[in-house]
Image (cartoon, rainbow, N blue to C red; front, top):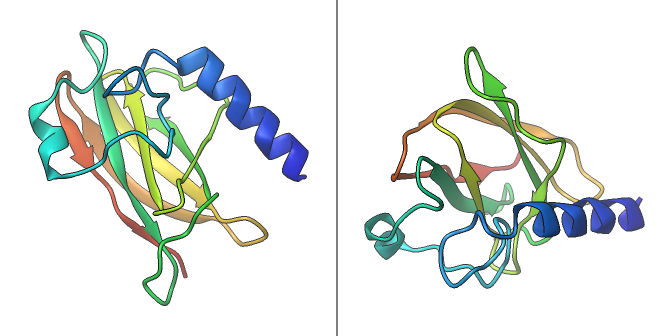
Length: 133
């Protein structure tokens, strides 16, 4: 199972590597900066926006290695069947085409939690923090 998750992440980083904001980081790269200042930087390639945030456990501690996967709602463009993982501090970032998205967050060995929906607009960053049950 862990090998499959790592493969999904590797494919996601290779496929979407140019989509994340900040220094060429991938969308879920734990080194990608996620802070209040990120709203002032471009969200990704022209015509895209981003969703970033933190995944926290029920106890409020950051959850590293959780899979974060968006799915389009309504007229949103389809999202590749990929997921990013949270960094050691629980942060993640997705660069997406404008639209409305629902997110599924699955911690290693845990049950998935649904979050959202959030609406992404070109050039903007939406913050979506998720607290697991």
